[in-house]
Length: 467
Image 1 (tube, rainbow, N blue to C red):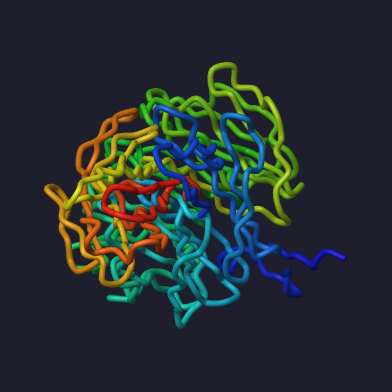
Image 2 (cartoon, helix red, strand yellow):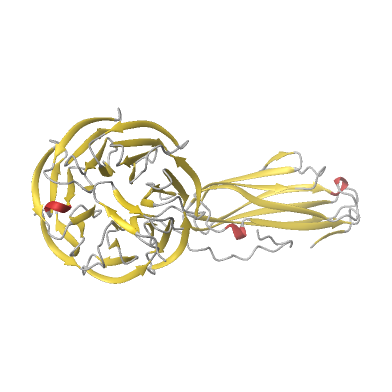
């Protein structure tokens, strides 16, 4: 039986009645075969992934926007109300209202890697453009917390209006805008001082706010006034109030700034022309559409709804092309598109017999399988205890060699080398050397090809076998 759900109009969101829920290769002289990378987010040149917070399931659904299918489901804290991506797409943050916390999702690993505890329930969350801070709305406390993303600590708490609902940060990072439902206003926070510098009355219960990409205008939904207010951010005044029937709830701006999209609980999703501030099109988007997000290229709008699905809207034709089933009670949604570089590691061993000075030469091959450039990486080769190699291009410490690489384009390879004199080996005893990726930037989506090994036996300095 599904948990009972009730919409809390004055409490910041939704209430819940009950809880919801190396591989390696021991072979020489052979490159590891490329293992297909699992589905992962991509950069703007490829289809991004949508992260949908499912309030009643305590999960996030990850939708591949190329296929409009759920590629993964990630467990987070209790009652996630919002999901917001870091600017580089490497992290997604969820506001977990029932567990009083923020979950930090590593989008490459596809898992929660950190949890930030909070004293009050979070209902909405925004990330600064530099990715350094989170602004988290606490509706019941009438405040916004500021979290340092580097160490996951709350660095400040900013009092705002009554029953704050949602927050957005200006494109230049200088201000944060918070809608105050009961105060019928928008608080403007100076992010340098974390103080409210302006409060703008909007003559209605303020629900959501979105900024145009240039930061000059803010669009504020007023669901019980059937209107959207337009704020001039320079003057801090309302310059227009647009009639938008059907309870306008959530709002998001297109990347080009020419259109703002708004969910209307009783009507669907509408497009507002920002040049004329008029509705140009409306499309049905399921039962009570709530939150929405626009792809980085502006081609698609995803809108969550109370039918436990996400409507996929083509912005060119402005039609709902499909609906994607997700978890129970989907709420917040955002797109993430981190850079990815799949580093493949291969190790070859070449016997070099000699009457007195036989040796084994090892070659470590690092290949960037893409799709993005590799900024930097370290591959560590570990030899048996007491077997200390020499290397012209790796840093050697005892029986370990750390081999670094920088600036590899997609499809490009580079090699590093180390050698072991046969005199160091116990003759007739097999020795295995393993090379593994220990660090790389950007994230590696495919750990299956991160390690390779080679096993050699030296019978004499003239008879060396590697298999």
